[in-house]
Length: 372
Ligand SMILES: Nc1ncnc2c1ncn2[C@@H]1O[C@H](COP(=O)(O)OP(=O)(O)OP(=O)(O)O)[C@@H](O)[C@H]1O
Image 1 (cartoon, rainbow, N blue to C red):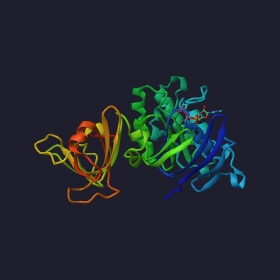
Image 2 (tube, rainbow, N blue to C red):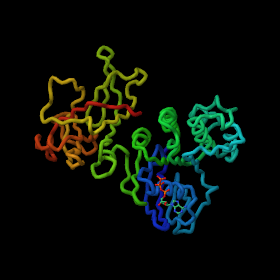
Image 3 (spheres, rainbow, N blue to C red):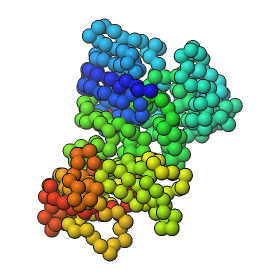
Image 4 (cartoon, helix red, strand yellow):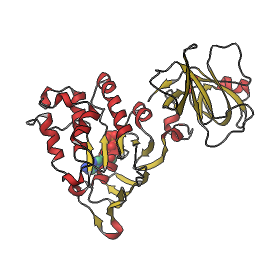
């Protein structure tokens, strides 16, 4: 089913802060709002939910207009089909898990329900917790129940405000796979506020970078991560994403071959459950990519990809960030839509190699993480 984009055009002036955004988010998948504290992420969610009466602009979800200031239209909060999940799960303490879920479920007339009662339980793995009281749940379980309760209202959009921020690293790791499967199976857009680059690379399809109430950039997450002009690509955590497809496994060599627009990657054998054509998201840290002018031979590095340098910028403390466009082979000219990589090398090495934009190089990838 094609879903209409979600539109959030909003202007809101508070003392010492102004929100001025014009967002167009895909009608499916996860859109992450990322930015420093106070940049306006939560305010964007609040405008979407109808909690900011003074905001001027346009809000449209699944082709329904919830707000259009030019026409004096403002659908009140209780009539917007929004599921809202906060940092701290706000379950009703006197009701069991089943009672909390029923509370959300009964708010929606049967004809408007988008999925069955069991679907939310299955998606979040909480069927065995139905009789428990909220005080008898772990932090991660409580948050899963809070998400299921938000889904039980059959929302047209799910708003999640740093849902993992209150959990420790172990609980985060426990809940992330549930969020990923939610993302794969859910047919509604999710707008996800986070401070965490790790959550962005694992969960987001689309990314909005906010700064001081304004949009610094918005677009597919892999495109934004590969840009050298945005704060995300600076420092030690700079990384890029490649969406690859399993081409086959070689049990004899214990190697899997993955293809993507711009080349092929070899990985130590993936689980056979990932059949041919399964899609996998790979994260490649800029610091794990080194460069050579000639194809290195006699090396243990499995992945050496021909590429063209598209940008070189200083990146502090004697380092430079090199943007690369990958090509299928040395002979294929670079295509703008082919996958991109970042490489973080010393300024000394860049000078020694006489790197310039437009130059053909070989990117040696020393580490690749499968993030989903
Ligand atoms: N109810 C309010 N009244 C006045 N100012 C507010 C209110 N809520 C938030 N603000 C201010 O609006 C600005 C944006 O806040 P917002 O909560 O949207 O930021 P954020 O990016 O979500 O931050 P964080 O990551 O810290 O949650 C901040 O300067 C904040 O202090």
